[in-house]
View (tube, rainbow, N blue to C red):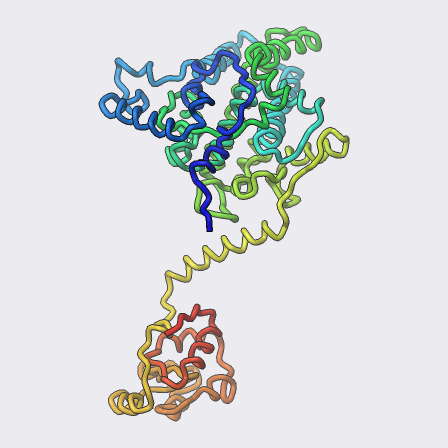
Length: 477
């Protein structure tokens, strides 16, 4: 049968086979992402060219390492930093904290309430819009809702939809590898914020197909004009709202603007860090994502991350009624209002399969820690003459369902009494064991399995059926 060409498959997965609209906002190099994703469609659709370029870069960095691979020193520390993100994620919030903690701008109840409201609008636009709508296409949305997500998502100062969605698709495509932008294996700090503040290594560059995002005029518009949209929505608009409502323009700038930005960024970053570090893994434990109610509380319901990585196009993160997931509720309510539609869910059967498979893996690991007796397939096979010969040397042998057991050391411990075992020596006690005298418990089967010494040649099938009663996986002899 013809095999799928992996080179062509990777070209398709990265969208390199498509010519998409190029939309730029001038921040590619400043954000440290341009060299990680920039491609020349005329050349980069040619895998031979890509491989040749990879080899050239390998030789280039063989003698001179990229700054991300060099140790930090007093002379080069500034070269390790992504300064745009440092300003947006650290510098600007520090201004807000200065004015707040110094008491130069006071916080009152009205200002606090508005800041929380604005925080919610920005947060839900990231989780419902940037994440579940655009990154995973878990549902579709009408233009008014998409515009709402695009503008209030920009207010959270986490990059454009295009940049955010591409990074997140890479995260899912390359989870827990060097090409994962926020690889959790590199530590909590790196996955939380370090990946944004440090320059990435071009050798880890990767690409995901975002042609569907670029087909959306709202995504293109927001990306092209991201800086003015971000500044207006994140800082100026909350200031103007507070001026209009409370005559407190400066308070709106500091609390509903700068400090709110800091809080929503840190909450969102917890999806990359805390959701890969704290909690249970009910669906799969081969990768780091985890489910945890605390992370869900912080991230508008994104904390059920183990479920999300297994079923990424499901519009839900929480599938149980008592689990906190306001983003799911918003998407569902918006569908009732006709603002969203085509809400995707995985079948309950597929979800239950994942749960059962993970439970089985855990059981298998626990099972492997215990002594279950010698497997039937590893026992020697005796014919009648060999059994007669062995019973002369070891008279404490009892046959049950074709399996020979040495009960010598178990005589005094037998709950049914030593005399019953004495009467069974050298004989087939199958009927007595299986209800003729006692209908033995599961524990009795387990004890008996640790007394095995051989299998009778004429009773191999019977022995295998007997072993399967206690759940053994019986291999053929």
